Amino acid sequence: MKTANAVEKFRRIERLALETMLDLAALIVLFLGFICGAAVALSTLGGLGILYAVLFSGLSLLGGILGWGLLSAAAENLRVTKSSAGLEYAGKISGTHYVPYMACSECGARLLSIEKCQCCDAEIVDSHATSHVG
Image (cartoon, rainbow, N blue to C red; front, top):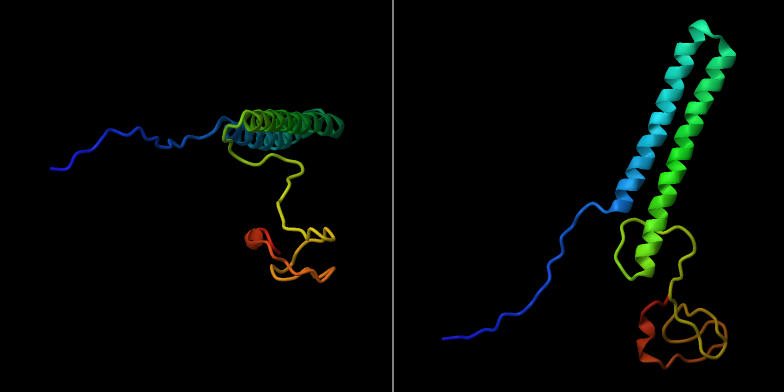
């Protein structure tokens, strides 16, 4: 008869992340701003004149764009906070990202081949140079 021990394991539970919901809400607010802007423009054309139609529809559009920007910034802030705490986050953080690559130790040029440096013709002898070449 075989014996076994109880081993603690973890399973991943996927849920919609808060930052993803904020991004979705931002797009909905932007869409509603455009819809309200068009509706206000059409409704005010009949009685108040073209100036009020443009003014009110512009304010509706501006409100939608500002709401989108605010919610997108909140989602970005949440991603950066989770990233700095070492937690997983949904979506992408905007800005600069660093990508590792292999460089020649003699001249510092980026390696395009794992055998030889194209810049200074030095032979590459490091065995783990196969990753991040290209």
